[in-house]
Amino acid sequence: MRWEPEAEKLLNRVPFFVRGKVRKKIEGLARERGQELVSKALVLEAKSLFRDKSAEIKEGFSVEACFGSSGCPNAVTESSSLLDKLEALLKEEDLTSFLREKVGGPLKHHHQFRVAVSDCPNACAQVHIKDFGLLGHVEPLLNGECKLCGSCVQQCQEQAVELGERFVLFDPVRCLGCGACLKVCPTGALVPGRVGYRVLVGGKLGRHPQLAYELVPWASPEEVVRLLKRVISFYKLYNQRGERLGEIISQQGWAKFKTYVLGDEGDNL
Ligand code: SF4
Ligand code: SF4
Ligand code: SF4
Image (cartoon, rainbow, N blue to C red; front, side, top):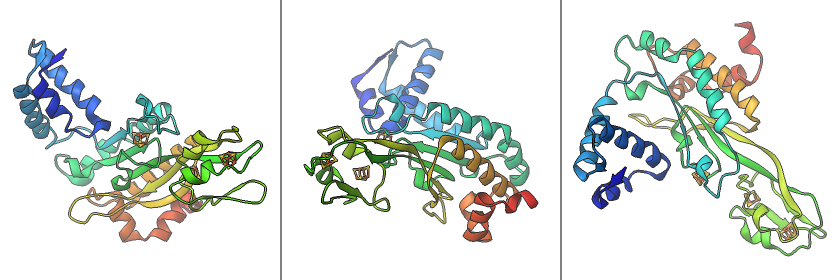
């Protein structure tokens, strides 16, 4: 499919992590119409068409990912199979029927339970404003001879590494798990340790926006699936009229939510 330069220009205004998806949708529309060339007019028409369609939505949930698995050099996790599992769980939980019943009318964009995964701490998938957000995280591990060259110290934007007397020392509180230090170690002494996700919950935009809270600083892909199941269980239990998770957590209290999701209180309810 060919694109007019003006049409490409418009497409380039779309955030890069959803650009591929938008390109596919527009090309699909062009094909439906038997067109081989995407024009500026078609992009503008598609924009208003897609916006209208989103006024009433079909699914009660959405799952988004950043550009990581398409070759982003910053990616520290590979989340394709995890994304499939999360999506399967959301379908199994039938959030669409659940929300339809709670809302008592057509589902709108702001009702959706949103899940997003970013494959590094740069958070391009806007995980901080999603109901359930994941940030890829790799723990730097010293597993060889450190020559105290200081490259990793200079590379770290978080001041999470310092030179000790015989080797480098990491501050696990400051470290965001971006993996940048691993790439510059000349001796190969730094290797990836645990790879997983920082889990955030309860973020949202709208009339009362709020940034997500950190549920756990690190979770394996298996733990992520288990946590999402518990989060949805809480969300369903206390949802009255299709509120977003962040609102429910504010009403019920963070301590109660955290105990329910991480402890065993929920099994007794
Ligand atoms: S979040 Fe990280 S891995 Fe994902 S697209 Fe952004 S920079 Fe790349
Ligand atoms: S992983 Fe990133 S944040 Fe952590 S020490 Fe290395 S460079 Fe710093
Ligand atoms: S980059 Fe490697 S060799 Fe240099 S200080 Fe860091 S761990 Fe040691």
